[in-house]
Image 1 (cartoon, rainbow, N blue to C red):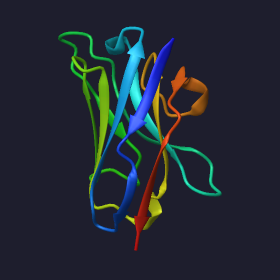
Image 2: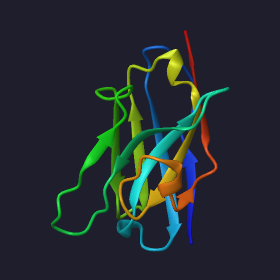
Image 3: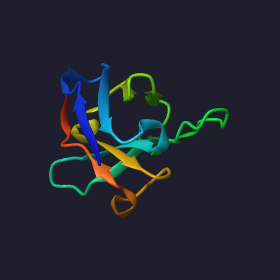
Image 4: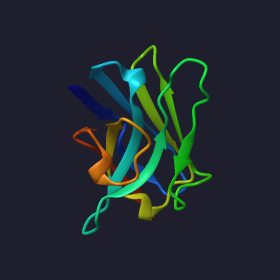
Length: 126
């Protein structure tokens, strides 16, 4: 089992920044690809970003949804068992509950995810 706990959500004005954190516990953090999904009010949950497993010398890769590319950055700190999502130039359409995820490999759909956090709300005002 892996437990994921998100933090860092809140209210921010358009153009502002937030950094989300996700603390993982349980199984070996470095064995999992980590990601972020989000669900806006009245919409389906969608992929935001993901980062590959950290297995020593193998280069880590990151992927992003087109809607956040160039504005959001995902990173991980294996020493702290934590994954981050730095969100810059926020827009009202980024308003959503953001979920941290863990999977055996980079995952783009709900069905590929092994573990979910409970989510943290990000509200961007115009």
